[in-house]
Every structure is written in C-alpha cells, then in structure tokens.
Amino acid sequence: MRDEARDVTCDSVRVAKRDPVRDGKGATLRPDAQRNRERILEVALAELTRAADTPLSTIAKKACVGQGTFYRNFPNREALVLEVYRFEMQQVADTAAQLLSTRAPDRALREWMDRLAQYAMAKAGLADALRKSTSNSGSSLAQLGHGPVTRAVTLLLTANEEAGTIRPGVTPDDFVLAIAGLWQIDPHSEWQPRATRLLDLVMDGLRAGAPGAGGRAADETDEGVRGARHRDP
Image (tube, rainbow, N blue to C red):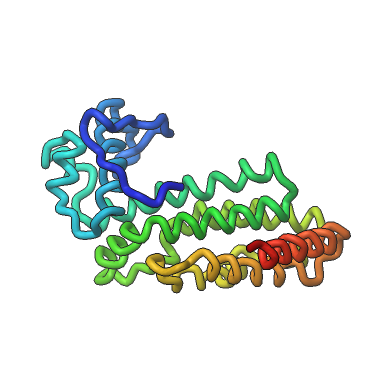
C-alpha cells in the first residue's frame, strides 16, 4: 500500500466497480447517485489521510458534487469518515481469501497480518480523522470495520486449524485482542521492526500446541528467516 496521499481532482477520480449501494430505506441507488457517492469516498480518503481536519466543503468541491448531494450521502463528518474507514478495512479483509488461494495457510495468515499493519500505519491521517470525529460518540477505533475483519480472521483461522498449523480453539476475538497492540504503535516512528516483533510473537503463540507437522515445520522455517534477518548487514 502507498504511504503518501495523492492529489485527487474531478479529472483524476476513477471510480472502481463496486457492489450496488443502498440508501437508508434499503433502495438501490441510481447509477449516477452511486458514482457521486463513490467519488466522495475516494476524494475523502485522499484528503483525510493528508489532513484530518480537511473541510467537508473542500472534499465536496474536489469530488465535483454540490453541497446538497454531499450532505444527502453523508450528513456529517463522522458519517463520512466512518464509511471511508469501513470501505478501506473491507479492502484489507478481502486480501485474506486472495492470500489463501496462493499460499500455505500459516503463510497466508502471517502475510495478512503484515498487510493489516501496513494499512494501520500508512493511514495515520485517516486514523486521526477517526479519533477526532468519533471522540464524542464513544466509538472505538478497534470496533470499526469489525465485521469484515472478523470474517477474514475466521477464514484464516479455520484454514490454519484444519491444516494443523495453529493451536485449536482460537477465536476471532482472541486474535483481535492479541494484535490490538498495533494501534498503540506510533505511525510516525520506525514502526516496522516493532510491528514485526509483535506479530511474530502473536504467530508464535498461535503455533504453540499446533497438532500438525506443519506447525513445527513452519516454526523452523520462521526461525531461519529471523536468523537471516539478524545476519544481514
């Protein structure tokens, strides 16, 4: 994922194909209304990642929509920021199935953890916007995007448990609590070594007591990788 926010203008926005969006009454949005909503989300992601206090009027202008259209979609800053975050978390969650289709289950799980860490750190500006916009509502950063992440974690844990590469009985809630330290790392620091150590510890804990030979083999492979890291000049 890219760490830097890019400039987004009316001409540069390229709306990705997504599932139909429904309004508050459950009706599917018209294609033009859905395009407007998606433009707002793309511009908001870029602008809020750059500066948490970007005016909503600036986002509306760069998305090429009027104030009425903007507020019909997102009545306030909190609604906008939460929707942007949920969508981005869905993108991260979707990589779980992609990784499982090309890698061994334990490798897929460990790489997905790295991707989650990269997202959490790269989107520091968006996280700041979240904290500011939800500070009065009691919302928790760890709770946002909970559904997609829980489904991705369930998929990964199930695949690993069936392969015998992690200890049996680990729940998605257990996993989320174990990696919660990611959100305590300063994204403006040298975060990668700290995140790697944390996630390696979590992975070691998951593998402890794994019933299959894969768990032991994976542990030995990881030890070799870590040793190579330390030997690199």
